Image 1 (cartoon, rainbow, N blue to C red):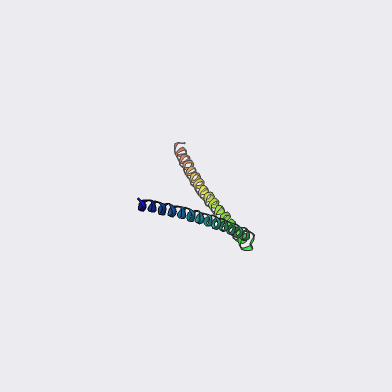
Image 2: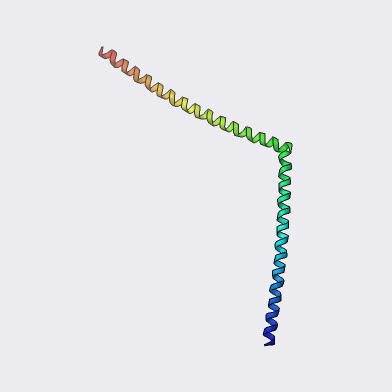
Length: 105
C-alpha cells in the first residue's frame, strides 16, 4: 500500500512539474512570437521606406502596365484582322454579285 501511495505521489509531482514546465515553454513561445512579429513589422516598415523598395514597386508597376498594353495591342490587332477578313469577304461577295448582274443584264 505504501508503494502505491508513493508511486501516486511521484506521478502527481511529475505531472505538476510537467504542467509548470509546459506553462514556462508556452510563455517563452509567446514572448518569442511577439519579438518576431515586432522585428518583422519593423523590417517591413524600414523596407517600405527604402529607395530599393520604391524602385522595385515602380519596376513592377511598369511591368504590369507593359503587359496590359501588350495584351490590348494584341487584342486590337486580332480584331483588326477579323474585320479585314470580314470586309474582304464582303467585297468578294459584292464583286461576285456584280459579275452575276452584269451577265444577266
